Image 1 (tube, rainbow, N blue to C red):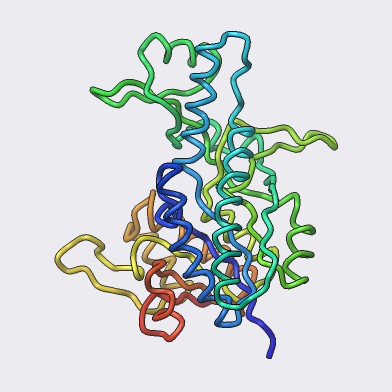
Image 2: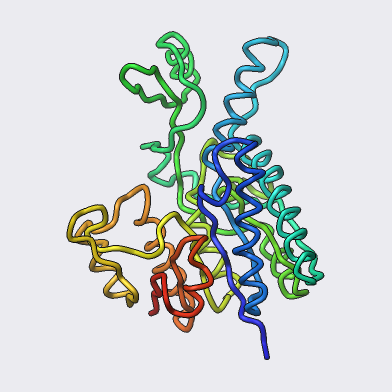
Length: 311
């Protein structure tokens, strides 16, 4: 029996928001991932990194403030750092969980770059908030550098960066080779390191990429059988958070597009996941998308929970 190939996208719940939270969270996450391995899935894993990259950016900025000779780390470097330490925690937790179940399988993390268009409209209207709260004076300094800032009343100013659309995954051949060798691969963490291709040189971009968008791109590039998006809710809902909230067990792409057009899904939460599903299924119509929570993976595999999206 051939293994089902899947890309699994992990949200903030899978990692926590601090270093200590992450150590505990990845142990729970590893159990859900191991359940998928036991269900005969060949996994390629991607993950969020919002709190992690924000923490690293803040730390590196503060280091520069204390030690003037240090150079501030650009966003692309902070993204690379977050990929490394999040991948390290996930791969060790999953390896331990698999070995505890008698499964011997290599788990690898690939430092992954993703190309973006330098003329993407997102660069002209940044939306992703990162880093520490700043004073008005510090915010003015950032503006003079050409960076964008946003004021949060009563708290201060924070930097905002662009979230451009992913184009190509630079290390896709390496990821595919590891997946074909039946290794568990962790790649494109935090949406990947955004880079702009200039002739034959890759230049880091001051941006972050939406991790769900990269999950869809990764699933399409690998032509996997399934894209599994693990989030904080057990399924997709109509009228989410309202008294008339209704669980949606199945959607087709036309139905999903219609719900997007009517504003059914919130921009910062469920909408990117639905858009990723639509993009993946456009390139792989025979595929399947499952959206559920970490704690509901077992039931979702039995069709008792989650939302399934098909072309």
